[in-house]
Image (tube, rainbow, N blue to C red):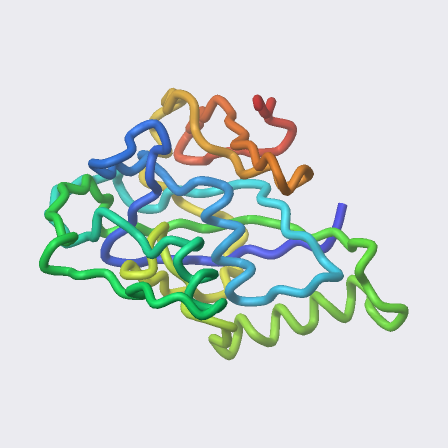
Length: 220
């Protein structure tokens, strides 16, 4: 077990997209483990450590709202970019007049979580790296509010504010609810084979407002 830390995160909106719904975006009920890891990596990332999410505390009631957002329905072709690089004359832009579409999104609103996580050392760590050094850096960054880039809740347009959580007892919005089955949820992406990146899922059970990810069964 590596060095543990608890971080409080909050924001106005969140969108943890369900991958089975392709066009109209719909959020999971709570933050996914991969989104929590992304927030931690935005605060502090180093090749010598790997973040592992232990628990996610849901501090505010789960509330949804529906909005319509402007999106583009196509993207610039990678083959076109390569052709232009090699001297071909092809357009390298997207015409928003032709490609813009309005799509509905089901978002979470007024969210607040506490992420409890720890990190483990990796093979990329240098000889001078050690858990104590990393823990000191992380705690200093959290107390100063420093980050590599602004953390976000699923989409960059939904920023996540953060602070160090030093509370021993964390009160959730569902302390009186023994168990709430949230169904299958995205756990993370398996990057072990870079040519065949696979999603990993788990059965999400919210117990008294806490999503406990320790020793959960992950399915590929």
